[in-house]
Amino acid sequence: MTAAETWEALEQRVRELGELRRVMALLSWDRQTTMPARGVEARARAISTVAVLRHRHMIAPELGELLDAAEAGPLDAHQAAVVRLVRHDRDRSLRLPDELVRRIGMAATRGNAVWEEARTQHDFALFQPHLEEMVALKREQADLLGHDGERYDALLEGYEPGMRTAQVEPMFAALTSELAELLDQIRAADPLPAPPFAGRTFPADAQMRFSLRLLPDLGYDLEAGRLDLSAHPFSTAIAIRDVRITTRMYADDPFPSVMGTIHEAGHGLYEQGMNPDYEDLPVSSPPSLGLHESQSRLWENVVGRSRGFWQHYTPVICDVLGAPMAGTSPEDVYRHVNTVQASLIRVDADEVTYNLHVLIRFELELALMREELEVADLPGAWNDAYQRHLGIRPPHDGDGVLQDTHWSGGAFGYFPTYTLGTIYSAMLWERLRRDLPDVDGQIAAGEFAPLLGWLREHIHHPGSLYEGPELIERVTGGELDHRPLMRYLWAKFGPLYGLAPA
Ligand code: ZN
Image (tube, rainbow, N blue to C red; front, side, top):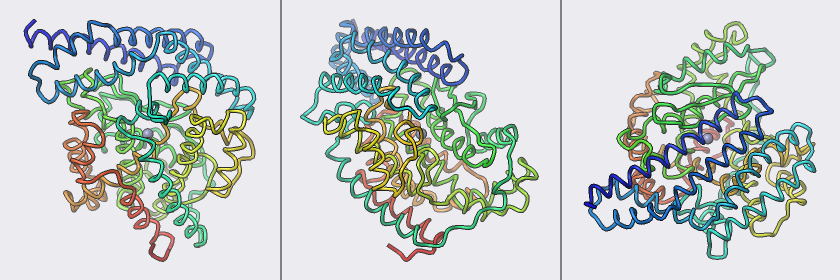
């Protein structure tokens, strides 16, 4: 075969892998939005069958031969990235027997269904055997994938390639104590006044109308995406021109839904901004979940919780939501969406406490993988950690250890990507403001095109051309560093709560 023929054959196989991923994403989107509850068992089988098919495609000897042949020939930058990414995925897949992939797939879908029931009933005992099975499977998987004595690294690698526990653990410890110091000062300060709309009711259809009005302003293409409701907001890229997001709504406060929409739009804008020339090739995907989360956090927090954003959108949301918003000023909304309060639920947390929720989960799952903690002791360890870091204790496991879906699906090593994403978002923002000195004024005018253009050029369009750490270093000129995040938080919450500078 000539080099061109080799490439064509390789690309064909890699595109098929992309198509199988698309099928899994669609099955999963449907399960979380519209599937009848009793369809779970059949869907579990379908998803795990597609996962096994994809696994077989990935480990096929022909793919290995094509990768070897392609590596020997001349490759452009995109082709080289495709080979590197497929090789990475394939090397990991080769270490996992079909049988383990199938068992994890089944345990994940079943465990997820039991977890939902256990959470509703506040009954950890119901979920415990499923979680024990999953923890055992993940320990086995990590050992098969291989590591240098830190089992957690093998799992983290699946979400944040190149990142190691030894790098994040000390940084997260520093971040935990610096966040605790900020939180202590905020707790000692006067609380922010309640907004005029507190205690009023907001119909779901009006909330949905505001989100649908906002999305195109941000640059999200509704003809290449859609917004639905789900129990937990999420985004999924079926294709570059089919990027779906969801939100959820509360009748007594429209802002969690707005923030959920902006967060998921941040993910969606990233996926819609990938280079379409390489659709279904892994180079047209984010290099890591942390990078993905950097986009959602940047839009949700840095943009969507800024004073300028609400100077522009307060009159709009007052107009769309009508009477219940009467008497609300931009400053009321700004304070409302930035109220800091230690609370039990991660997804509802403010910017200061959010990462403490994540760091608690990181600490616990690391202990589970190190076998320093067993599943039976997890609820107690969870409650103690909340007491220690946030000064509160869940009244029941439904608002405690059962609140997140991740562990039921086997996603150990996933949580740190939320905090890594927040750290990346602050690093990117510092860089972006140097390149776009008027970005605050543009946001206050409802002009997002310059901001989106910068993200498109520097983050979205390159996709996975570089590995995550390299991309961050190319764009920001620095290595992973939590200090820009702490600077950003002090710059916002210091004046808001009248704190003495750190
Ligand atoms: Zn997210």
